[in-house]
Length: 286
Image (cartoon, rainbow, N blue to C red):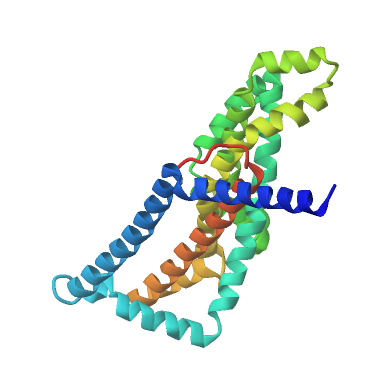
């Protein structure tokens, strides 16, 4: 091939690439999505500014700041907590309990969901027990857990795992049962074993449902760790919430709640990014 032909071929490839870029640039659907993203971000910022401004104005005028504090007082309280040096240690303890409990709850829930989804006989046997256990008020189990496991890390982890287990289990079970029976019959006709069916069909099908359960379980993990700390600990965000509530320190209490909310949003965002990576084949939704 001559140099002229090679140059012409490269120019053609570059031209095609530029044409594709131009097509994507002027694609109305892409422009609409970008415009919608800008509107969403701007609206969120404006809404936050309006709410915080109204809160700041109402506090001390219409409602005593003893009850609702104010954004400015909360910021001051947050700076004091941060400068005290204990905030990072308390956050670390709570996150350790939440992450370990979350991991155990996810593994147990997904495993049980796949087992019950793949074997209807086991599902029918365990159904009344699972429903009955799910009906129990979980917070009422904390005194029993203290009696069994003491007031150490294990109590918070087990309680958190219990809260996470059921949303993950229910969603995984729904995902496994959502698989077309015709697809299972086809893969078995092709010689696939039960293990191959679970690995190649059931688990991939359950992933979309699983991540829906994970998004629900993220706040449950933090709630479980914090609630258990309020009963059984002298460290962690749950202990801080209980302490400042007993001290009637509303600003520090709101600051701790704001930190908890920020952690929940952060973990939820991480789960969302993992979902996008593993479910790239899934059409984007709101």
